[in-house]
Amino acid sequence: CSVVLYGEPARIDAARRALGARGAIVLPLPNDRAYHTPHFAPEMQAVRAVLDRLPLGPGRARVFSCHALEDLPTDSPQRLRRLAAEQYAAPIRFRAAVESLWAQGVRVFVDVGPRGSLAAYARETLGRGRGRIVACDRVGRGGWAQMLGALAELHMAGLTLDPAAWYRPDIAALDGDGLLASLTGGAGAYEAGVEGTRHAG
Image 1: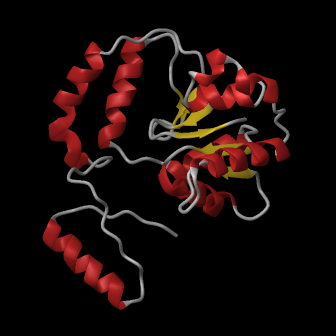
Image 2: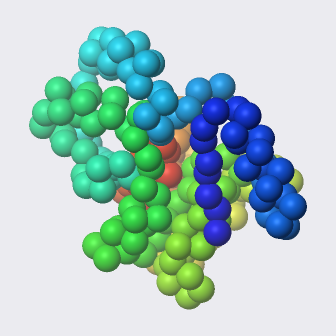
């Protein structure tokens, strides 16, 4: 079970020593701000200023918020900006989000974040034998091995691959979920939360 603690440096250091003495593995996060906690509130004015300048249009993909535990709106830029800002100072409810998506019928999850950490959390949440969880960034594997491995896993999960599309010039210019969708015959990418966990479902 993974738990993130936040607080004043002295108290966190005391907690780290106490937990370590009981055999827990404690790792500091490389952050200089208390993201997803009320302590981030003083930064919110700057965040809102950036979001207010960001041009937003109708969404093309379903986006599920791990903070609100609902789909982000595709027809209300102001509400989308508000929800996007709120999540910076609120807890990310990743476990509840994965369980909610499972209840909605999602069975394939694709982690496009670093080191496959979120894939591990999703496996921990769902337990053995439930769903297919594909990590696109595993430590010690090169880019081609990562891509081919992810495509193989998605194929095993029932997505149809379209190798002919790989050589089209317009596809070669794509990246991210646009590239993945093209390589799998147009499978929709789906983002679980604004933290960047995507899954195909």
